Image (cartoon, rainbow, N blue to C red; front, side):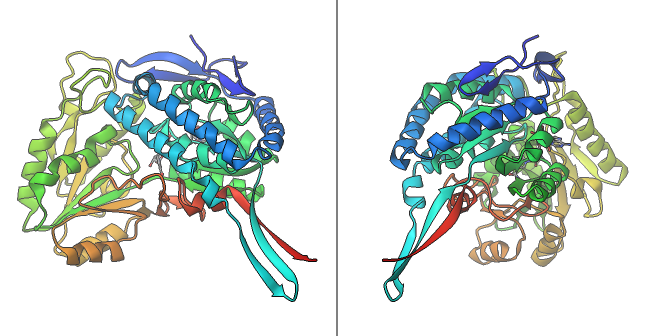
Length: 481
Ligand code: NAD
């Protein structure tokens, strides 16, 4: 069985050891490759090489550093079809969704090319007689990037281009469930001419993460994953003196007001709950209605959900692919069963989908009505194609329900009322708010926000000013001549 390679100092290396983790094609339920756990010496070696490379890379003028990003961007466009197939093969999402994942990555490469402006310093002359003061932004050294399984290209690229544009080097550790997309991306990094050692790839799971956290030459960690791991990585990273930004789990509420334009927004709403098979940190999870529009919303939502074609993401015409693993699929089914037990009404049952003998980890779109805030499906992240429907008595009660969540990643309101839209943005405690936008995904040059237990740290992922601050240190120079 093929083992996923590491990429260190410009070379693809066959890792030592057995393939500890199996990579599946989730649409076929078959193992297609394996991932060994990186040993401490593998991580240390990759970091040492990144450290050496950083000394030279930070001396390359920023105007030349960003030229590599322009080259990389063109290569990514040229090879998008091939990379999308790799992503679909290991993740299960449709090829169109994989392309969306890659396009978001490319937008971050483009956005990082604005580093020439962002890195500019500040100065004042004569802060005292004949004394000048200036602030310059300097790179920190080596950053670790640790990503989840669900956006195997976009999420590492939330960080790579900005970190390197600022003069740092990076060691990337993708999810052990979907590492092939990054392995393929390293071929593009190589082709772009980015010097050896600037971007390194190591593989493994939790042990590899610990070796990264404990490595003293890593200055900072950009992490995205589930809340318990994000909290652990944040606390341990900080205790080792690193700066850490850690994106985490979500439970996103989508409110539909009686004045919403349902017909023109329905496909957008369906995409929010069932796109990427619900394995998206911005996915709608709880649909909140009011008594006066509940029946109509459910009827139209069910009608649209029933039309989704579930199947192999590589086949054209597929709207929704499988879940990532069999055990994950079983866990999602358990959530549906728990809702039934707690009094929820299953309006559309994805467990009954007939896949005509296909072996993949398929679950159809599921809609559960009469969900109460106390129920498990209302509180926990399910990460699957399940919509829980709640009915609030009025707008104020809806806001209270939404804000009672321990998470605060995203939330959306569908309305034609400026008043309610504005109130929603003011009162909902979530980092990414959509108004008639079901997946409130910030464009590359805005930070990807997140509140409460959906984010640990101060400076958020993606572009904008947060990344300039995260990937540089400020040095202040005071001079008198
Ligand atoms: P995960 O937490 O299982 O894994 C994330 C990373 O942590 C992986 O690289 C993994 O190898 C590593 N890891 C796993 N267990 C570890 C441990 N015990 N110690 C140290 N490292 C460990 O997450 P996942 O299942 O791959 O991804 C799904 C989760 O990510 C969901 O909760 C989703 O909401 C979240 N997510 C959040 C965002 C965001 O921006 N907030 C974006 C995408 C996904």
